Amino acid sequence: MKYSFRTKLSLSYIAVVLVSVLLISIMMNQLLDKHFRDYIIQNQELKNKAVVSQVSQQYKAGGIWNTEAIENICINALEQGMIITVKDVSGNTIWDARAHDNAQCEEILSDMADNMHSRYPHWDGSYVENSYPITSDSGDIGTVTIGYYGPYYFNDSDLEFISTINRLLMGVGAFSLVLSFLVGSIMAKRLSSPISRVIDTAQMISKGYFNDRITEESSTIETAQLTETINNLAETLEHQEILRKRLTGDVAHELRTPLATLQSHMEAMIDGIWEADTERLKSCHEEIIRINRLVGDLEKLARYESENLILHKTNFDISKLISQIIKNFENDFVAKNIELDFEAKEEMIFADKDKISQVIVNLLSNAHKYTPSGGAVAIRIISTAGKTEIHIKDTGNGISPEDLPMIFERFYRADKSRNRLTGGAGIGLTITKSIVEAHKGSIQVSSIASKGSEFIVKLPKQAS
Image 1 (cartoon, one colour):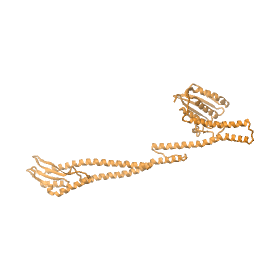
Image 2 (tube, one colour):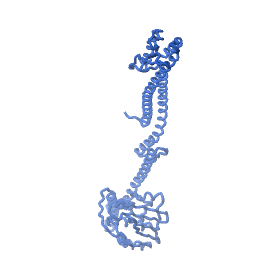
Image 3 (tube, helix red, strand yellow):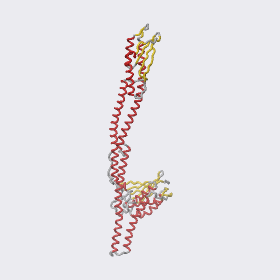
Image 4 (cartoon, rainbow, N blue to C red):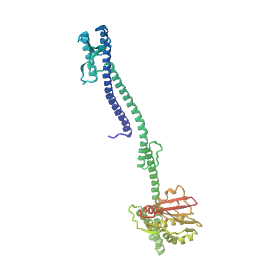
């Protein structure tokens, strides 16, 4: 059987309180019995000595006893459960409680036994007697024998005190139980409400609704982290959904034009409207090449993003590699009147030379595409502790703030018009990022709209 978090938390509060009150009650009863028993025994001894002292004061010179006073003392003691016998030094009885009223003595002992058995059903007590000598300046003058139900007993007042303590503990337990239920319910609600909200949001995410966010704040660290994680997950999935839909549109757009061109040309040639000459076949071939190039880019992206991408690393001078690539772009930059600035200095790195070439080519190609005539592109290599940084900065159109976080996503292009002049299917930067991360490096970009962009590639110098 499954229970809600709120129910379990409430029950846990109640269980803790019940166990705590139970343990406190048991410990208090144990301690109370022990200390109260010791107190009763000590108090009984003090009362015995007080009676002996009072009786000894009733002795007069010449062996005369004040029997009337002794009787009053002993009757008062009898009412407290003490059965007293007083004898002189010769053994003659001066006063005997049983001789005075044996029925009362037996009734008192019976009441004592009933009291003790009501509290302790298995208590094994019995009648005990202690004898104390009576002394004066002339020496021993007699003995006082005191009998009681022992080794200790509780009278009505003592039992009422113990019962009051137990009732108090029961009252505290009942109050604690109610309080724990109320506090547990409140705490459980405060803790479970954000979690329930997280569950609702997660269920909405599982159904494909990614725009729901958890706005409730929690002072519990773990709960706050959970809600933040779910919100981040929803945001990420929402972005991925947007990209997925955009990917479908982009792929359809990239394929529609060449396929439509091919279809119209083929239909025209089949119907005899056009002659299947070399020029028209060449046009169809170019469209096929475009489709093939797109498929090749997709295959390349899948290969670069795979976890088992094989890198053939060697030590080489990254400056020399960039210089060679710049020569290939030199005519394009000159034709567009873009100034290309690169300060070459030797910088050895351990990487896959071909794939790093692809990174540089992609970044330089983008810089060339998006930098207008009369602009400039600067390449810098900065050596830091354990890393080599490649900075490629242009004075192009820049990237808007809303597009900047998305530019490394598949098929994402900031130019929504998909102008053929800017070309590409929008996966060049995705491939670039995959190659860099495969080398345990990183790539980042900063950009200001209408002022240009700067891409920074960081690669480890040594094998990793």
